[in-house]
Image (cartoon, rainbow, N blue to C red):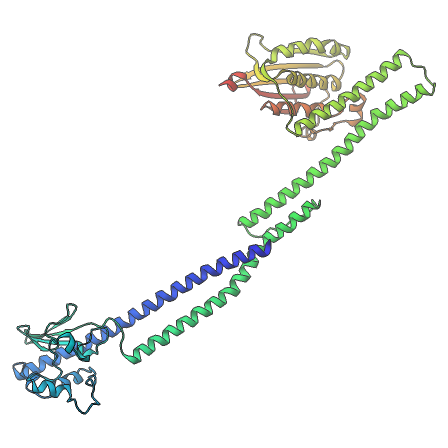
Length: 497
């Protein structure tokens, strides 16, 4: 899987880089060629501007444009003075053809004069601007805009410069701008630069392959570590941790993985402790029952009514422990069934008070209920489970409250919450034990708890019942000097609303 992710990531990076480099190559090549053409146009404009100054000087000396038509070869000289290269006439090597200057001379026109020819009669001097030399793209008009040099009808994109003598316009000098490079040397330079761009692009791509491969391996290393850690977790090694580097999402993934491993490790420790505690809790009453039955079977003791009652009570205690474990396992599986109805907490508390009062008196305890009977103390819940909740709380106080003490039930409402408090007198619970008092099989004094019949599951079941009813339960040291269990449940009116 790692190799597949690596290949996908590498190909994605390379594809992105390749597209970027190709686009950059196209843009750079286009920009360079455009800039080079602009550079040539600027140079030609400067040459034509100098040519306009030369024409102005000649016109000032001659007083007319006759020097272009009467003087043989004067126009090429002026072009050469302006630094404009004069291309060789077409078919100059052919002895049958006269130079273009002679042909134009015979027609009564100045050398290099280019009249508007029909398409079939056009020479190389009449080529389009994309390929024509500079000398063939220059036009000269007199003050009446009659062509002196160049085509009869100049192209529409011709750039015009006024020819002035003593601030008086005597003519116009036109330049048809070039739109592509035609010079062989310039084209060779452009091709050389284009080849350089291609080699640079290829080099960048090759370098990108190495960089992308290294970066992909570095990027996937934390994921690989998490994968290896997950394999170790699945093998049961819950002490596995992965190294956390940085503060990005991958570091967050590593942190969450370590937290998950820590939780699994704690759950495994709790499971093992739970199995050990359950084994111990079951082994003790079973050992007692086994010993008593063996004594009866061996005839050491007679099966009197008292001994049979003792055996029965031990069996009931063991049965209750097994039932409590079953209830907790149902809660863990989310299978605790609730038959929801309107339950009056005051009514069931009053009934339980009457039920527990004789036993409380036997232990020298005073049981009281503090609430207003006319008040609405109804909640939506399972009546059987809520009776079990209050019974477990009263049973806990009955077992652990010193004789001569007090157990008090208080019921009140605030907003949409019902609060049930079961508090007792001494002894209290150390602050360090309050946070664990709802843990399964946890006892503040294990030896004393077992001697009074406690299994350490009663308060755990209370917490499970309260949470199943969307409530909260907390333990704190109460005003009577003992433990104070506070239960909050939503009132039925708030649930119905």
